[in-house]
Amino acid sequence: MTLKLRRLSNALGAEVCDIDVSKPMSESTFGEIYNAFLRHGILLFRNQDISREQHIEFSRRFGELDDHKSLPRDRHPDYPELLLVTNRPNTDGSPSESRYTGRSWHTDLSYTTTPALGSLLKCYELPEVGGDTLFANMIMAYDTLSDGMKKLIADLHGIHLSGTRRINKQDAGEARRAEVMKLNPPIAQPVVRVHPETGRKALYLGEKVKRFDGMTEEESKPLIDYLNRHATRPECVYRHQWRRHDIVIWDNRCTMHQALGDFDETQLRHMERTTVMGTPSGYVVANA
Ligand SMILES: O=C(O)CCC(=O)C(=O)O
Image (cartoon, rainbow, N blue to C red; front, side, top):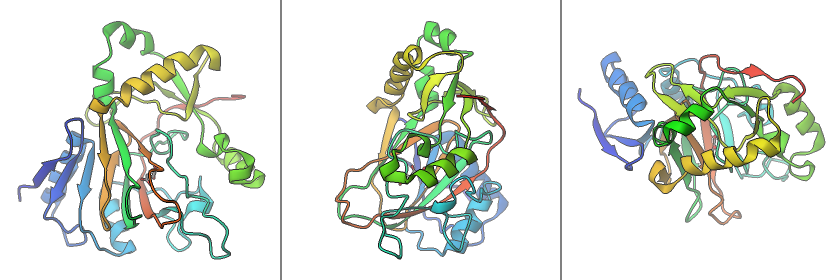
């Protein structure tokens, strides 16, 4: 079978057309999908009105799945392979802990020593308008730096902090903050990451990074801000407008993303994500 692809933007992304991911799929068809994933950084599958089991089963074809133990409160109560990104209130009426998940530029699990290979996000409920997600091509971001800048950043490591380290007490609650901080010590990751499968170099940063290892925040901030700004220029970015039953998979090793708060938060937005485990990268930073 030859896959029918439709590019989503100049920077990155392709829609895989006319595929039902819940149907049996040959190795060769999946091989074509995987090659397209490596080539385009993100893939979109529309109209996937499938069960949670089928979402998990399709995700497993990309590799071993994370059980989200670093974010226990956001796990689906019945499916540890699924992470909830939802503003649906908890059963006791309290606000959902995951209602602001992903509201800054990041790549998944970069604050661990096995950052995610990929993430498959399925859309269940959408507000009337908005609720979009931005994706940036970090290979393009790296390639478009000057040689001088490439040399300057070649050996730098950015210290990645889990989201809850940066959340204030009112939003997260002190107990949860302490729990997640213990589960997620600060991790230094190379600023220039070599993609383990394609060998391409990509910027590996985002807004979870507040300083470089061996440097102060004050020293690091101008360069971190510059690199994040450079990576998120419109020419490096695709903006996804969701439809119900979309599944989007992104390659966390060469893209970053951000969920936008561009919608009426009294309306429901409910997404569920599987996370494909990646290969080891980075190191724990003591006393960061
Ligand atoms: O809700 C979204 O659009 C993206 C969520 C997100 O950032 C994530 O799952 O890492």
